[in-house]
Image (cartoon, rainbow, N blue to C red):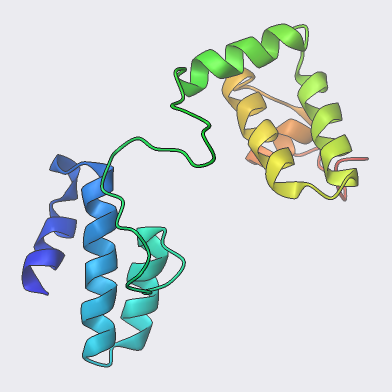
Length: 143
């Protein structure tokens, strides 16, 4: 366990895929010695759903499921494209996030709000409320 804990204490030099494997191995080790809370936390950081030994061990830094391929754009590039589609206004991000929330898709709405905040760093209104940058926050996105 000490070696695995050392890797995490010095993780800035290690690739993400390796760190996922270290967290998973640490979760197994903690579970074996009865440190259940530490095992759950390490498993959560690993990104794996369980300690099932039949799950494949993924150590690559880049992968996607269902044939999606690799993402070829940096987040700021993607945000710039979304902003272009929206006409460069903060309100488009807000309106779209509201509609996603109404459709019951909070994770997608959050992703869109995060993108809007990257594009509109000085956001006011509802987008600013989400970022904690506005004092004009009401009870939710409709205010």
